[in-house]
Length: 601
Image (cartoon, rainbow, N blue to C red; front, side, top):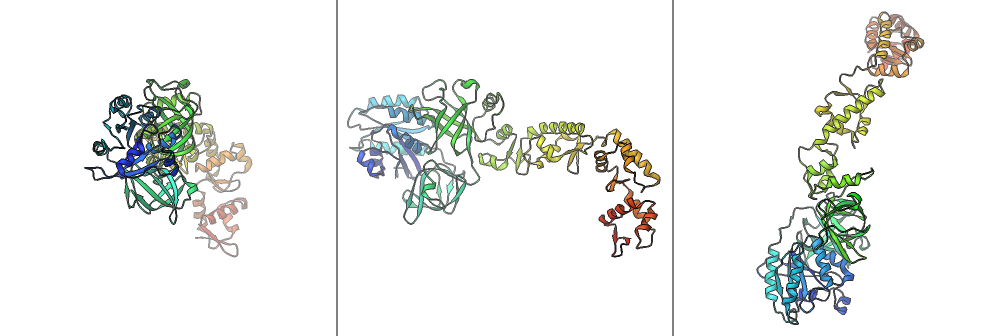
């Protein structure tokens, strides 16, 4: 199927022309037929000569009060049939419709001059072609017709066949994003929504995301018939399970779950409106039109003092949306000032997860950062800008994840950022050692915080960098490989304790001796962590090999042995023997029987 949207001033014969081409009534409401004008979106379809695929027409209203409905119709559609009446010529809504098409970047279309039986169509045709030539549509083919007499309709059908046959082939494997333009209920079926499927494929039973929830496709129709599957491009009606009519409406989007990012803050590039050579001053409040959605947005210019960017034709701004939308870099939209009834310019989405602007000058820096991007989803470019990114978020931006990108814990790291992180980690380890000389290194969690890493597992990637080769890890801490361990004063004090224990390995120094040597709680804890001393109980410190020496001496005793026998064999006091035997038991090297005697395991 191919889809074409009408465009043009009110009462220029758009609906009459669609009716003449299709034999169907595009105006759905009795009020529309009574007033003789389209006030909402209409749909009709036909098969053109020489084409196998049917063509569906989205008939949009032309009255200025219904511009929002018009934009909802043309937003997702790739081509337009621009209509001008021969007896009226170019009119104000002709201009606004063309401004909208130009802002959306529509390039494929056909000019149709209607009511050729009422006036000479050449003047209206030439005037319209002049206007169209100044837009993204360029110099279009033109056909003059009369819906009343049928004159020119064969030529129009032939021109439409050429138009649709030249449209780009849709990507039927793409992620689905169906902008809803109508929602209603059908007795016995429930909620039904319609929209133009521009890319991807939908099947009965598929689950689609609707905001934060998931709905199931219960059934589908296209061109009035049940179908399965539906492939882009297509006008499709979906019968949904799991959602009420009050929960879905025009402007909502049904998307492939997990493949789109919904955000209410986006950075965009705004081009000048048609005919303007420079970007216009934007009001603080605008309407963003994308797909079938129309969302109020607050504008924050990113370039200095709100001035246009360096080429003077575009402006980079940040939009804060009243409602989050599923967008991707490269999406085209338009900004409109509803109060002034004018299009402010076309929009290219650059970033849907932009960083916060907290520091002075951050907005100007951000504008410079975005100056080189064209809004095309690109894995390397996204990672280079963000440095760290969730894999799922990159996929949701529509970018392919390269196999060689460093990754850990579901996060991706820009390869160019890893050397920077390695240098910062070395600096953080050195600074910690200077500030906390008694600690055995920088804790891994503290290191992750210092590097602003969202997951400590990313530290392994940083430590694997050549720039971090001077570091090593042990016990969940990171230190320099050449670090001396304990400070000199503590090392000297520990050496004195070891000398005291050399001849009497179980004569643990008293508290006053430790204090005399300058070994307080922190120093002793550092010595134990470094393996220079062994703590067997509160205030009891021995040499690191004390357990092995004790077991060797106790092995000479008959088993089982008493505490007194062990104390004598070890040449120590009860103060040391009790906690030492308890420590050996916890280590599984001795056991105690019901009578309180000990034996080696």
